[in-house]
Length: 520
Image (cartoon, rainbow, N blue to C red):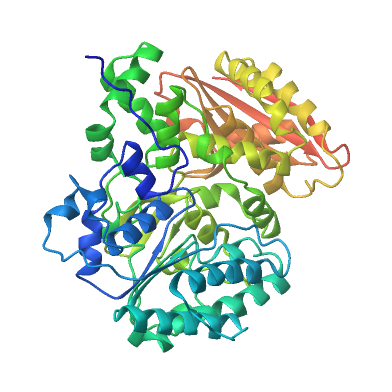
């Protein structure tokens, strides 16, 4: 008998649809047991498309007593009465909130639905008071506290982080709505809130002293996303199909998957976690691609990096305390917090003694996609033009053809418009770091040695490029600095050939105007 093909739930966020439709489901119901045996108020922060909506849908079905959907899953084995609870599921992921009034429309539409479903009669117009009336009436009708699930509570705020008026308008509305979690506590059994960011000044958190933030807790690290163990247990057919498609051994294909989509850590002791959106896509398509990156928009991130004049090298290899990761403040938006909470950075390690996190880019998909989307903000190269440029540049660097790839960079810089500001060495350095990283080679900036810092170090299989960048000086002076400070000394016994490149950028010409090369 021929085996039925696996049905991957691409973009499907309804637990009931998954279970009734025979889609593959990775069992996360053990976390429901932790929740019902813990607090009455929870907050979980995770990047977009990481399974938050599906988990809330699972909670909804559980509290609605739909036990048939849970047959064969962990939660069906515990001692639970499976009584029905009234569930208010507020999904704020249904609008872009780019103009005033859209949040009122979303809330009004949801309130109308609940009032019709539960027979709530109210004359309240204010969203906060209307929500309070719904909570109280529904609880009294059922004789049980309501379960309130809020999906993407912060989307109206994150989407307006650079629009103070809209941000503050929506913040005030949401703060009023969420204040009911405290004032109507006697009518509530559970509140579970999800989002990307935690805004510390929003009253949903300052007013609720007993809310349990599980974002960074070890025991909830795998609640969203797919752990490495879950990949190996649930996706054997998908891995085998990929291995057959690419002509690689099964174990080698696992390493390819890991390199592309693994690498997320959300706690101090976190398992390796894969991006679930990309993982399902690659198994369905049998093709590696930047699925998660392509599904979103990095405009917000690019604008923030430019606004703060951030150094990319410092950001993507940063060290910080937990407080730097927990909240966002419209008055001072930290690019570190924003990049971490939106999934472009993740925890690489944790120093328990100093309570310091080491952050980094999680995997190849994020590295390639993030840099490619940032490229137009630092260069004149558009995303749709970048592929051929990248392929040719990589080949030139791999074969040690310095003049060829430097001429390519020169032509790129010469095409910059006057709105791109390269009056500081850091901006040119950021652009070059982006380009070399996009090439797929290991590129690092400000690499320290005993007598200084190398501006840019690029590694290929056969070559090491040591680059020094000068502004309105000379390539000779840049090359002499490399030699005088003996930047190449740490690689004197390396099997790869070392190539020193002195580069000068002319602010008058607005381009790289000369370079000198020395091969060791």
